[in-house]
Length: 416
Ligand code: HGY
Ligand code: MN
Ligand code: MN
Image 1 (cartoon, rainbow, N blue to C red):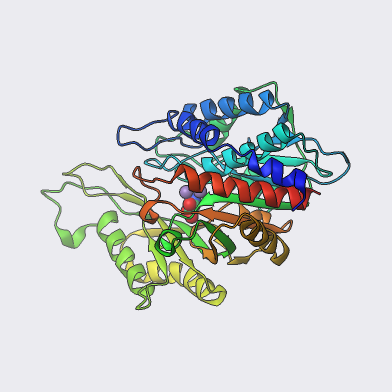
Image 2 (cartoon, rainbow, N blue to C red):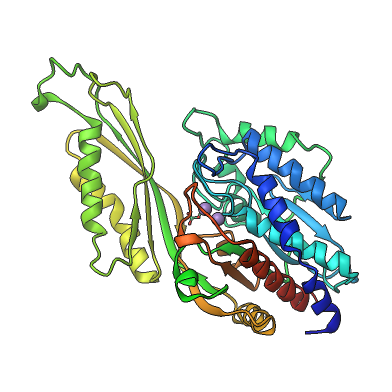
């Protein structure tokens, strides 16, 4: 690694990174120590404003696209060169942790600050992206901002999606875009020379093996669905079971059928029903409508394809008297990261003498979509007991800084 690059990498400051992480953790802070920063919420807007103020203080320009993805741009010596991009997301799960997503955004900002302080100017521009709605907790599906940026999905498909309170995404997005009217608009899908995302592992492997850096090789496939079952509400005391069209009773049968479908002795399949809405949701009225989510994942392309195709038939086979709608909201096949970018991440870990291991990602990330449009890779750092999507999510300042150094080193190599 060139002397100037080593100098820049050495200027990654663990305290500054930790301080920014803790400042962001106060936005949407929960009593249990985690955060709730739903996409396009007041908390998301506050985090966006905080990030933009830090980016501008570094002399970077900030642009925003039609779905609210934020692009922090550090100019290179060759303005015509496609940027090397990094980033992640700032939205969180309803009871999320202080590091999921936001770490990748702030590690990218830290890498830019280290370059700035070292006076290193790369040939390519370097951009840090904060993707909109990666989590999909409030508005399904997940990884929405990167899907629209890369052209995999159209924004128009999502505007009428509603959250649990009936708020439409289009309205929440309009408020978010209006909150920072002075940002440059980035309408086109800008080409990128490469994309690297830093993220906590959200699993236990690195911690168990005492490795500091995960050199991520790819992401497992996933399928999301929303299933709606519609029956007829009735009096709980007077209506015989024989005559009922009980939507919850039949939703339970459908969920049990899906549990059978996804039963796996090797415990490789990941099957989750995380969201269930029941109406009228009253103890003495027979449920007339149930919406439940289905999240199925597997690293093997043929297996996830088979499971995904079997969801609707399994649900329909279990539902007798009610009507059923099965709406697939996400179809992502397993992705393999670019060998050149994976090697650059590994080279950086070796140069910095950090213990590392190559590994796949069980969690999905915006890198899933960027991998379809440019050479892409990811960097993992350990999180305590592998816990994530939980307020107890925790990570060590030293590991977070090590990940940011590997990110800075890999970005410098790819940008020059
Ligand atoms: O669901 C996921 O895998 C990601 O953490 N949003
Ligand atoms: Mn994440
Ligand atoms: Mn997450």
